[in-house]
Length: 526
Image 1 (spheres, helix red, strand yellow):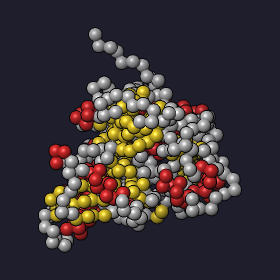
Image 2 (tube, one colour; image 1 turned 90 degrees about the vertical axis):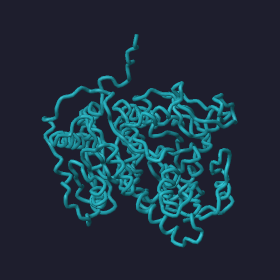
Image 3 (spheres, helix red, strand yellow; image 1 turned 30 degrees about the vertical axis):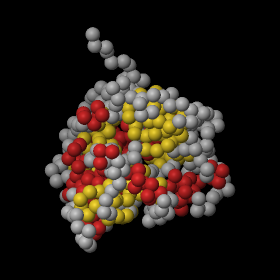
Image 4 (cartoon, helix red, strand yellow; image 1 turned 45 degrees about the horizontal axis):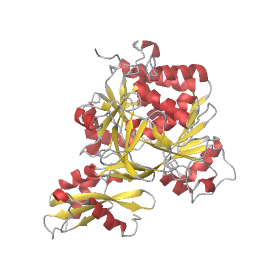
């Protein structure tokens, strides 16, 4: 007999029910405060913001976007990004939030693979989106570039304001937590990024658990400066604040010089950081007093905490885990430089290569057990092979990360799957870069590894065996191909022509030897 699907914490709920409840309960309390780089900002109460979301949802429904259909959203941080993202989900459509730094080839792949029926972007990306979506049903564009006056040609695009409808006309549908909520494309070890598909239960899980981990309260104010197309900003910040009834201060991007003035003006109490941001702030004047209760980062009790007068809560998570799989605590002392302890919402294992648990002080592979569609992503959309390969036969999700078990019970990050790079907070698959370079005429073989960088953590370096050692234009052709097909942060910072590559067993490239070679050199500063 087939077992019935067990209950979830969110039965009878979806993102609509959360938004509707908070609009009713929080009403006039500020939800979104917009701080552009230039010009006047804006503010929306919970009631005003949810009204905008509802009107957007009615607007796309009126133009025929059905529940389950996908809409491409290619925007930097701006109010329209949040309205479109949550408005699509409110209507039952599936927002596909893409990295705003994507190259044309990448964006065309996202649009085609997702089968998006419409696209939403901003003026400076209009030409890129138009080229990447030749057969799409409709395209809209925001009135400005994250607060900056538009200077790009937007002919062929409808204004964002045209997506406006009467919420009373929204078709009725059940509050189904298993309905598809959203897609993010994440770098993987395959040649193309995978489409991580979340359900509404996933979004609600991330909201509830993140708010709990962060001890968020209705009076908190959360500064969002990381990109909204990432899980960190979407879940750790926006959805967590929404669940708690807190406020969000949104800025177009991180600015070290504006960080403290904005934080003080709005009495900000929480923000999510990456090491790059914290390092950049070390060079800024420090206010005598601020209102931060906590910062979130990859490590607990960060070495800069004393300087800034903050407490950093360390955590680890992935797009596939929705929220933090490991996390420090806001109420007790955390071990310096740790990534926290296993979250109560997950089953965490650290196993050696033979599948045996490692002991304290030992390093092993990090694996996670959760519930697909609730605490773990539902699937890689339209890619059953990748979905199956992401899990062991016993149901453990393979993260590709390695961690060390501390004798104190905390976990410490050791390293990543060696073909994954972390460039300024962005995940980059070496295979994505290699795929582009390998197709350049004159390239016999290529291997890409990361080199340490003082600000960006690491940057890509490409080792290339040329077909002709005297080909003086090869490096230029490689650079041109990478510029055309890869986002800036994925482009190699150095291209080295070599006679051969080190080999391991089965003639595979010994990338460890290449990394060791780079480690002997000064850290890249470019």
